[in-house]
Length: 194
Image (cartoon, rainbow, N blue to C red; front, side):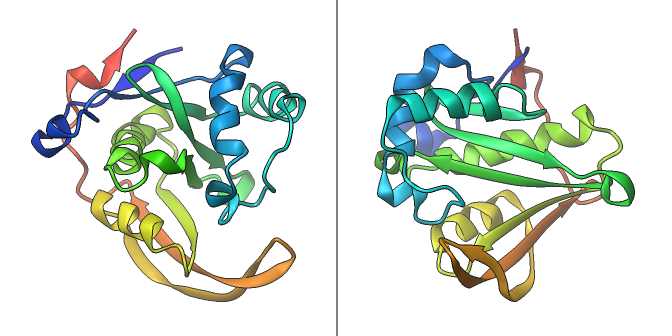
């Protein structure tokens, strides 16, 4: 499986967050995964509840992450600090997929999620040539995640009222999209490293 690496932006070099890469997660990453799945700040906007044991995290990795068609660790200097996934659709909806991501809260506000989403946006339409649309659904109260998507070039399409049950309560979601025909990022040869 390939590792995808981003070229650093000048302002990220100053903060030493330039070495962001994506790679598959495996069971040996369980201790790193525990950092974000046990964090209430991270799970607040996620469909899953905060994990309370290493066994739960290991089951997540083995049963959900490893068999997923596109689930990657967001790594800083090679160490997982979050995750990003692209969920494909089937049948008549196979022309679109949904991106989702989460990051350990101590790394919020440092441009790391933005870099990870840029990496996905720069490559997913090449990896999956049938894909026409990459979507993201974000809780209306999750302003940080909305900013990430806007910085990457996703278009805000509107608010879907009472669209999703989060922690058993209906919430409004903001729909964002990026199309294969939208202006794309320059894809550098440095994005792909074995």
